[in-house]
Image 1 (cartoon, one colour):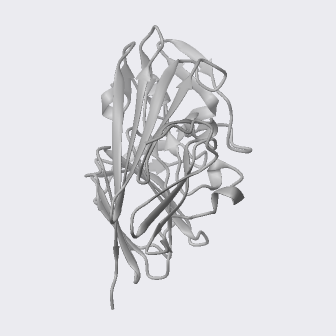
Image 2 (cartoon, rainbow, N blue to C red):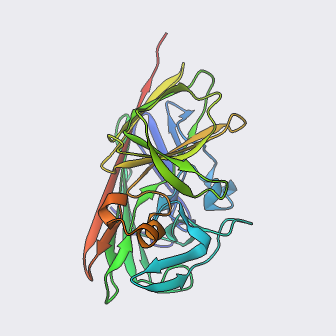
Length: 294
């Protein structure tokens, strides 16, 4: 084990799994391969220009959108940074846009950290960490954060992996609700939903599923990938023209931080954690891969 805090990229691996990580680019995964097949949308680290084009990146201290880049919290409006082109919203937290430090690395394990101090993008101090553990046919991730501010602060975690959408790919998972989305890409109401069991070819989704049971299967003629997480919600983003399907385990509903203020709904109902000073939360996700044999 060694420390390589300034490393530009890391490669973790086992006999059949390779995972490339770029700590300085949002602590993102640049690529993930199983038996030399891309599991995620994969790019050589040296060719990756920004985290938004990565294979996967961490979502901390919130996931998806905060409406109009304005956080309503305990009676105060905190302006945030609009960070998604022409959109008026703040999206996906701050971790994916900041460099992370490597604290530990072996051939199949890495520990990264990020320390956030209050700024225009997020008004509360926190520390975050990520771990990556490569196995014979899997990669396990953890993402944690600790509130380092003097006051209670809202918190959410998740991941944004972009899975390769090969011909014949099918997506299956169980849930109990799906949030309708308005033209402004913000959720409106939750409708009953059993989840999905569908071909990816014609899917056109950018929706959050509630009551997710923590397991997803993406299967095609070459590979079956199972995603498992301790998080209770799942965002699916794909379109027929896209060569990926984003399968995003998240802790809270899209725009949950403002829905609380607008509706008076309790934080836990929408999946938001309220962390007291010094309090932490941790998320877990594992990708299990299996080659399909003729």
